[in-house]
Image (cartoon, rainbow, N blue to C red):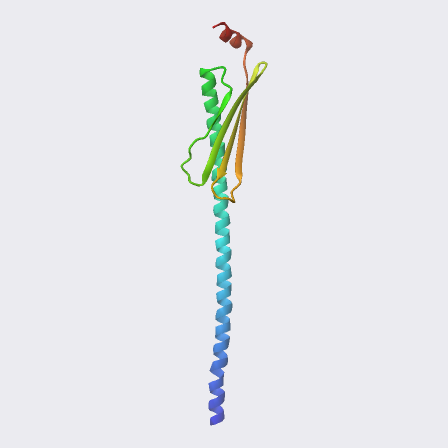
Amino acid sequence: MNRVNRSRSHRPKARSGIIVLCLLVCLSVVISLLMTSVQAALRSRMEVRNQLRLVQASLLCDAGLQRAMSKLKKDTDYRGETWSPSIEDASFTKTDVTIRVSEKEFERTIDVVVQLKGSDAASDLIQRSKSLRFSTSQKAKDGNKDE
């Protein structure tokens, strides 16, 4: 009978070792899945932030073109400016909009360049530019000079 008791008492210890091993394997699989999920979420968040910056830069380009057109209506000698709009988003440290107006023979060009720099060291400079070219008539220019 002692033999039977010894072999029975030995079996539960072997089973508990296998159970612990299975639990460790399952735990490591769950942790690796969680880590992959967290990495994907962080990557997605960074992509969304970059898309937001691109949209903001594009909208600022449009605003710069509208500003230049408005200034040109008031003053035909307007040549451009650089302005730094304040964006309430704390992720930007520097935002510059540069407007340049150039003129060649019967054509005027408005160039707008927007630069967004993020506050974190890892973020890159985002730069967008838009141009608007339109013709001007010599008659209108001569009329302005006479006044």
